[in-house]
Image: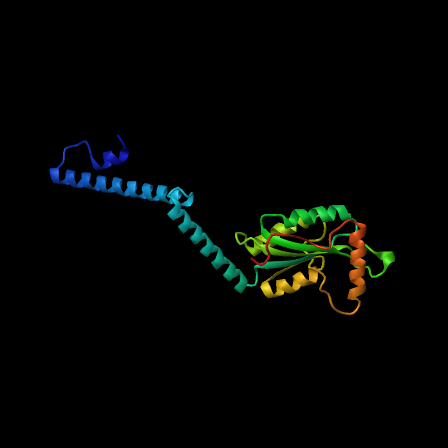
Length: 221
């Protein structure tokens, strides 16, 4: 016999009305427990699409609204996107650098990305000197900006000083700035000496079997 039942149905003799009141209270508690359990079960059925097509569609629409609200909030807070520049230490090999960048952009923190490798030389004799990468990322909204930056720093800490903004620069931004940086990554550079620099970048990529840019997912969905 349960302790709850004993509590409301003591073995000693007592007034009949008191006993009835105790039993009624016991039944009310049991009914409330049943209701709470049933509510939890129904919620699990709802969350796992076990209530039929109608409720499955309702849950899908609910998720779409939640995502839309999160996207609007991120856009208003200018942290839907990240523009990242990473400049590795001189002793880091190009192979190690490219593999780490690929690992970084494919982390679950991001839903889409575009990036391009560049270098800083402006003459054919020095092509490849100062190689680095520019990355545009769309944030997975299940991850907070502060957590993303910390995780990224942990991924690249062997490449550079992740605490130094000059070699590991992370900017959270909204769509307008992100589109501008996407154009920058894909070759939209203006200014004195930029054309020459882009020519050297192209030679650098060709020499190392690289694409002009790498991208995956829909940055603008």
